[in-house]
Length: 496
Figure 1 (cartoon, one colour):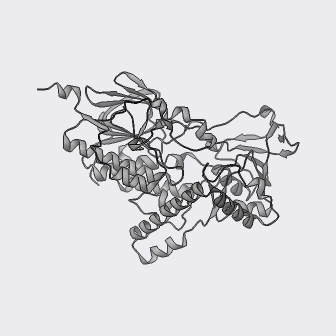
Figure 2: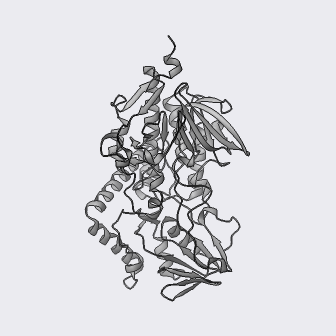
Figure 3: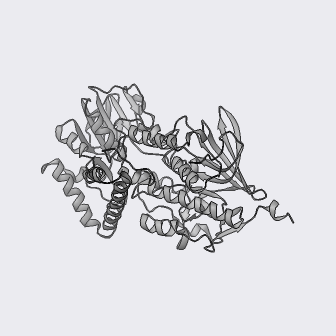
């Protein structure tokens, strides 16, 4: 890869915010497709990896297969397709190291403000570093800061919790030295985090109870992809990876389509599989039979049925009930039942945050993301030269992240060829008429809808959950679609 600029310069062509899976992927694309462009990555933490470095709770793993969660340009070659957090963190770090990306990262820089100036066609980005503001400028801004708050998760208050004599833990802040051997553990929640923690803690705990107000659809999948592992023995790794990646993309698309068009059939399929795994006498209804349809919320993936096996062994159980109060010794439920606990894990979700919570200002006017529409799933209406990454909820995050990075590079190159400084997705309608950006009933999404942009009724303002459609409409999108308005910096325009 060619050198793409020094991270110590005050001005670069592109500032990337975030050194997680998306940010490292964006930097790789930039180096590959826009050689000679300078860039810097501003990362609020002191390590590469984003989510996969932040979360250290027991059993942390992907809830998507690594053949689609991995980068399109760097094959995933480990045997496990459902990978643990340390393996994913290593994969991202190795990608950055091999491409020379790490030297472009400024660690410990928390971006708080980005201000656009049309006179100079530049972004001025302010980041806090060691308690002091640091400013950099760039022509383009790529926000790869994830979708949730890193400093705290969503943690509702529970009545009586101050009385509890044990330990309360949120998975986002897991103590490194925690020993739960022989302890009684209650995990509050039923999402991907809860179904990951329960079987891992159950290996050495006295008993682990997953306490849920309402159930989630849980589907088991082999941790290792036998077909992928076999193909790698007879084909070059890039060929095998590409074939499995597309197989999984199409299977994901097919299953999602079936869930949306034949929800009763898919519901029966999922609950029947759970019943088969847990045995004929287990009460799948109510514990694994949600009231909502499949993919109204994200399905929970468990590798090799580990959660089901923990339940069958008696080391773990599931209780579907509501909390009346927290007591000194555990949890009292509205049904009157009590759950004794030494440790309570609040796997209650994330607090979603758009653009990392940074303030966005365009020519002196503050931008409220909720008043904007999403353009080609990559930009905001009436905000120039800014790209943001938000992945799929019904497929792997990286599939869309890579499409957005590719689109950004195409646009940057097009503007250079045509002599443009500014690209503005122009929208002159009423954004209040837009639809929610996600048609998803999960609590963490519903709590945050008023902080996120909307999607429009048609055209490039739609926000799809369809990779093959996005591949066609984003990767091959015309740069002169009549929506993007191009111009020169005002100070350039004044030059005779």
